[in-house]
Image: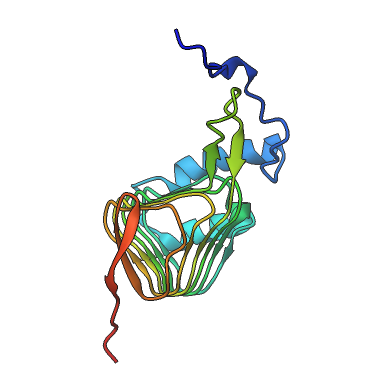
Length: 187
């Protein structure tokens, strides 16, 4: 056994965390998230958008939300015009996730706003917002970590993990994601 202090999960306490809605609203949301938002039998993006808006999400025009998406707390979500959210994406919005216009969040992408303080013996909860600026693309199975901003028109390639801010029009790959190129959009 080490002489260093151990993790003591029995001391975990997130009572200072406020999810932004009461228990009854969260309970109703969790049910609707399962039967409307995540349901792969429901192919109607408009129903998903309307349900998210009814629970406080700010969603622009022309947004497409595919089947199998999961949203933790819609009242912490903002999506700009003409953005696509792909099948199986997980928007883990313990705090705000702001997605700009004309963005693509591809299949299986994970936007994670919560983590734990691993230096804290009680493993305390840490939440930080995520910003995805206009025109950015989070490719399939990519992960955006708490506190990260993806610069406008930047790309996080498939399976990559963004742990820090990306620059506009940069292409990022790997874990941790590093800049590997410049995005050029035909004019």
